[in-house]
Image (tube, rainbow over all chains, first blue to last red; front, side, top):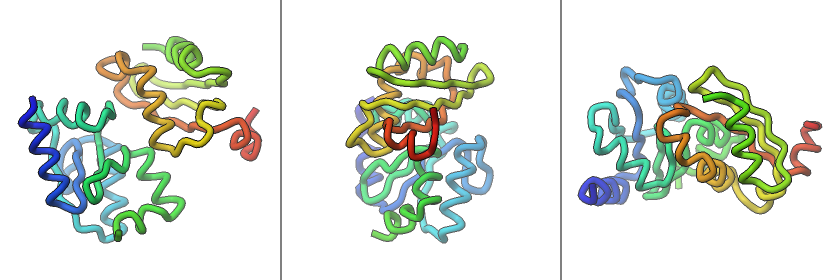
Length: 102
Length: 80
């Protein structure tokens, strides 16, 4: 498991915006993941995504890494921002755009 | 997994909290008012609730949407 955790750390250090989701941006496999993709697209965000359904180790490793039990998970500048609920809240109160542009 | 179990587990883990839970057996919504949220941002509040439901979140609960408010925030939004 620890190399999964190391890979996650490396990925979020090397990429400004990273979304761990179920499915892909083109075909999300869960409503919550789809909602976050929608928000990022509306904000014209450039990001990379990982499909945890395609990688069981990643699916459990990301939950352990962030100590957050659900997917999707959004990371910006190496920091865990939140899941669907929090991204929607940040988007609705206008804070998310600022976080993404930092 | 039923709403009453989740409600009582959250209440047991958060002092003086008011908790309402609805759901369909795997996806749940919770309204939680507690003084323990004072001085915490939304992420920290949600993490606190997830730590209380750590076991249940592994399998039984697929999704839990939460509104986490302090007593004052609840009053502002006139939630009893």
